[in-house]
Image 1: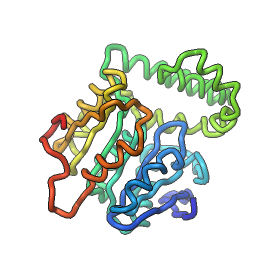
Image 2: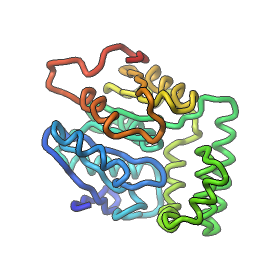
Image 3: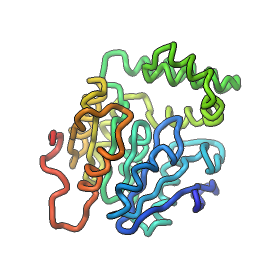
Image 4: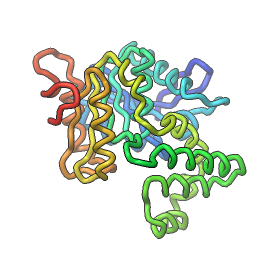
Length: 274
């Protein structure tokens, strides 16, 4: 990250800007930094000025306490101001929940795209989120960062043998380093359910994406986002999982974020599959 800006509460935010054109800000999900979404910058930089940044509490950004979701919305406001006062937003996983909240909060956003925000649309989803929240707060409160990471990996459905393999790998220390930010992503997700009232108040176009090879409930959650947002569109990326290929995703985002007025961003109306 080669640039810095300051959020409303004084938190330093590290970001990188690539390309020229209308601004697009990329927002990472849990257990990740700006480097996770940075591979999207190259394919988009020919048409857009692309910003990837370290969310507060990770990477080179600061972590002013106390945390609140509103502070992360202010972080996006600071970044939007730094890149010219208006931007489109893309968020993956829980980062998608953050950009939807930012749009609902009335930030100067042109368009919003999200990929597989893990809202619970299955029976018992809210209870599962509540149990995870309780266990996560306990682990982090006791300084058991490794246990907190394990809890998150189990929440994602990762098999126990893979979790233990990860715990014995060189990457584990880096995961423990940003484990406190798991509480931030959990707060962004709220009760885990689709935030119907907030989504209904978004006044800009929303593209909700999912991969055809991801679990069915993730596709259902993506569809629910599109159906609730007044200008929502739902689209499936064939062959993709939650670890979406940037080279598959980038052309879809580029088409949606176009603002030259010569072509509709995507066919279909609210909730449509394209």
